[in-house]
Image (cartoon, rainbow, N blue to C red):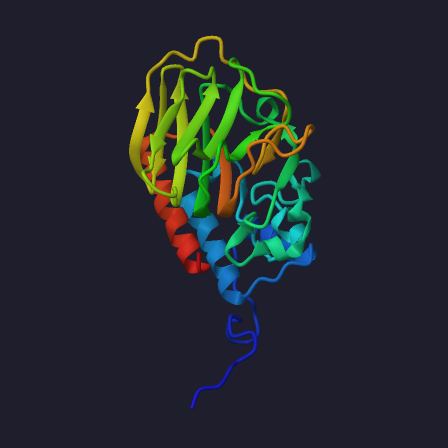
Length: 280
């Protein structure tokens, strides 16, 4: 016969395990915001941070949203800057409802919902030629544009900053800078997977699915600049209503400095382990 042991994650003597301080800071903020985290969730979060740091990736990530806690306030917390209000997502539309913040992540299948942070690409990234954007998608409905990451306000050809999953049919689309220097890949079906797009120079932007390169572009990014408008998730240009809304389930989202092939492969493995550990 087996018995449930409350607080089984505590060590002998009633002492809680010692977590990485940045992992603990994120956990504390999620709980303070009303989120629910199991012992397994907390262990998985700690493992994520430990692995990122062990592989010299933590310092490369500028924002990341694990969307933990199963409430609007909890999933709004940024994993890199958990106490910085400028990185805390302000939700709109259906994402103001706790019901759309699930154990699987953000669910926008019931209508338009989006989030905004008080930061722009120009205040987060140091160079338009060193930008990585990524997201884990477990459900996606084919539609017109489907912005997972984009800016508030109209887009121009000189300061693009966007990750679209999908974009026109089943295409996945990543661009930082001028519109012609993008990488796009048609998944052939609903684009489920871990998608990472990385620009590492003015003539190299690569799109990856589940850690493997699927397309790239060497078109010059000359004239591209970092977007100065606030960053939005799951739509763009909400000042005029939801434009190109994402319709699906997103389990993780992040922005980083430009990562090379080896770094992307390592990061994808870490994310895969983390997402599996939390049931995504």
